[in-house]
Image (cartoon, rainbow, N blue to C red):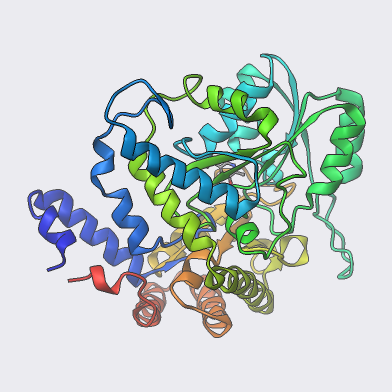
Amino acid sequence: MSSYDTALSADPEVAGLIHQELHRQQSTLQLIASENFTSPAVLAASGSVLTNKYAEGYPGKRYYGGNSIIDEVEDLARDRATALFGADHANVQPHAGANANLAVYQALLEPGATVLAMRLDHGGHLTHGSPASITSKVWRFVAYGVTAARDDPERPGEVIDFDQVADLAKREQPALIVAGSTAYARTIDPHPFREIADSVGALFMFDAAHPAGLIAGGAHPSPVGVADVVTMTTHKTLRGPRGGAILCGADLAKKIDSAVFPGLQGGPLEHIIAAKAVAFAEAARPEFRHYAADVVRNAAALGTALAAEGFRLVSGGTDNHMVLIDLRTFDAELTGKEAQEVLDRAGITLNRNTIPDDPRSAFVTSGLRLGTAAETTAGMGPAEMQVIAGLIGRTLRTRSDEASVAAVRSEVAALCAGFSPYRDLLS
Ligand SMILES: *Cc1c(COP(=O)(O)O)cnc(C)c1O
């Protein structure tokens, strides 16, 4: 028994569920683009006694006593974040990426101000002005999208339409322009956004929730120093604990900090902040540069292999950790919803996703989103990506045959057995 299990044996019900989830994570393929496997050190810090401490405020300016060590923890996390990304200031308290975005809007915008951000059905995030999100109730969001798909392999389209961004910026005079996406497989160059923002006197926020780890690892261009503010999650490609962070220049530091606390949150999660510090240090190591490059290389291999199975790649390919596929070229009848469900039964975990101008609803969809960040952490490479694409194709072609789906599930388990990120945690 590991020490992990010993502590949890006090609650067999919860222990049992954690054990089952550990087994699921290690015996099925984790291809959700926003997920990863943290290191055991990140897990340990997240499960530490730092969870006991109340620390409203910031290092040196706390509302409760007993925070001298906590101050060191948070200072370490902030220093490591600013060093890793080359930023003036970091706020490591946002509980999640959504909170980081809300805090920036609250810091920089008056209620009712206009914000230009990516269309949700083209890959924007809920916090970029979804009707279901509080963001659209407090601020006025105007959306830009991607260009139309083209039949030209040299210029396949479905890339950010910068002419539209510029036209909308001119017409709507936004106070803030937001770049960043939750389902976009291409590099997002911050420079054209900066130029457009400057041309209309808007501020520029780069939401790096997905590519933060690729940026830290040098596989993607950094928006730090180009955008006024950069928000991120720490749990996607950055491979840290579930959480958020904000980077900005010294000029905006005070505004951002007050927007996070007391503007939006109460006491910070110092155990998670310690785990963020661990993750920032891990991402600063040379191995992480190799990891980021491998994630991108694996996504390219997965995309090529999926195209060979008959799926159409949205935008014709990928530059990052994610592949967005259009199922209609594979099977016009197959929806994203059905594909996700049958792949789940085959032990292949991913999510359905709208594709640009999807004729189906956001609940049904015509696409799937896949990511390589987690299985790259587990040690998989291009050869495994080829195998995975074949298993996906086979599962979906034979989806009405449960015996075939079950056979894939066994092959998936055999594949995953060779790539176990938490071998030591299994008793
Ligand atoms: C994931 C994501 C977020 C929000 O992250 P949570 O931690 O789930 O709140 C924000 N913006 C984008 C673009 C994302 O992909």
